[in-house]
Length: 150
Image 1 (cartoon, rainbow, N blue to C red):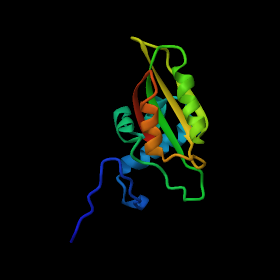
Image 2 (tube, helix red, strand yellow; image 1 turned 90 degrees about the vertical axis):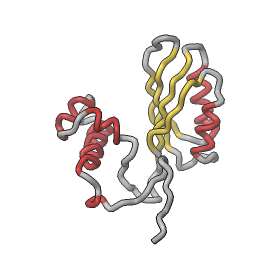
Image 3 (cartoon, one colour; image 1 turned 180 degrees about the vertical axis):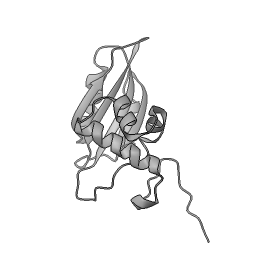
């Protein structure tokens, strides 16, 4: 039997009952955090019986299937140089690509850089997500990018 060679960033559709319990718990933590019922990762992981490290290890690798008709979202984690206009350029790139920004969070800068997270709807984007992420990498002041969900 031939096997399919999957890359580390490929997604596969798997029936929920075939998944190990940790994935169900990660999804439950995500649901609690995104709904606002719980605002602390520590509290949510404790409630669902997993460690913070397990949550952070798997949170970007599992997502509920919502079907093709539902809007898709992406969350991009960035490390930005602490200089004027970098975040503004990043947000402009989202707008130019047709992404609808849902949330923006930025930490205070430390050692000349700040972490930022942008969550956006992608269903109206004119640019494929992988190409869009490559465009973000070329913005002056963007030090690192990680697409965590799509």
